[in-house]
Image (cartoon, rainbow, N blue to C red; front, top):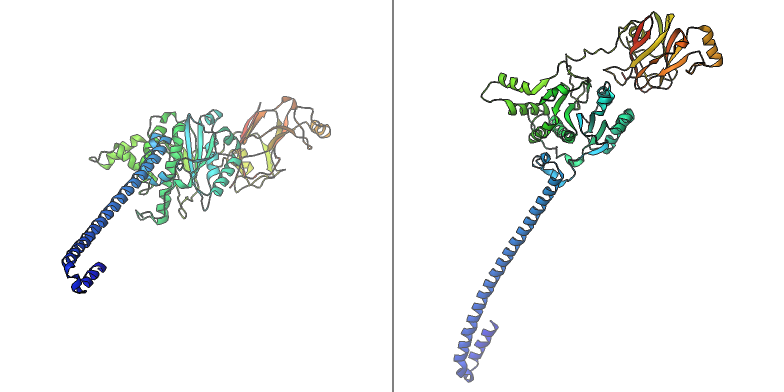
Length: 519
């Protein structure tokens, strides 16, 4: 525009510039054309620049996406290489695990990594508002295991909580109660990483269950899956044990060909089947409770949809064997779900003798222990029931004074029973009082001339309780025995049950069992 104004000014200037008019007009036309072309080129350049920017941005975004995809594939591939083949599908059902490489590997608090056993027992436990059953369940599991059986099994306690303080407190409680079992490797204690669990705050409510119940059963499915996968490579059979139950342990060789043995409060699986079972759980872990999923899995495997329900139940029964009598009994009424009460009892269980009766010679019985309800010392001596008393303290005793002194060759005492395996006598000695009065006086005055230490009141210490049992022989040089006494040498943290007692002599056979434990 400034150029054009200048041209107009020249044209008006006067006659001196007439001769140049045609040239200026021509120049003006050329300048106008050049300006028009300049605007056109500028627009084209601007469009071209925009296109270049768009293409560059698109290519950069594609590169970023491809790199991210590659990184993700590499990460999953890396994780997959760490996992057994049967675990790789977990990332489909629990996709959040892709971000946490170690989320499926447990925190092993105690354990010797025992493998190659016949039986693996898994016990999941969570924090409860009311009763705690873990220690009693472990006592029940270990109660009748022989040393050979203990070498061929492993018990895994899965503390399914992520609060480190709580997990450590449970682990220490187990270590305090079962130091030998922890040391030997029969007992393991594990917990899950916090990153194992997905977000459980927005689950869909189904079957009329409350939000809390849906969350509880969903987490239970995840807990069982975690425990089963950890246990799977350790042994031939896997026994899933509910926390609050009593157990009668038997060799399970006859069940090696079964798929699922139902034991009311426990389920026995072949370990080789666990990966399939866990994958099925994870497919539907948010949808249904664990027991329903087990039943559905059996339905999928054997039921014909063209046949009726009766036929289906028969087919499932071929895979799902129910042990009779049951090897388990549910104890306690409080579920791990807050507010849930469950009165589960197996009518086939409980036929175990909680005390063993024997013919005992006439005797007077007495004790310094505080007797619980009807479980008196007289009843165990007569073979009618066990003897049960509150926690003994140092100086307490249980005494059997024979009306007619007799020679005793051997003795046997058992404390604890199937329902209260932890109620045992600890740091308790077995003592006998010689019937010869002069001998007793000599023991008091001069000490023992036998291979047994003597007490200040004339008794000889002939044995002691170990792991709830006291047994042994009696030197015949002592002569006839007037009384046998069980003397408690230190305070006990638990109550006591005497469930079996035996004296073997030339004239009689006596057996009595003590049970000391927590009421």
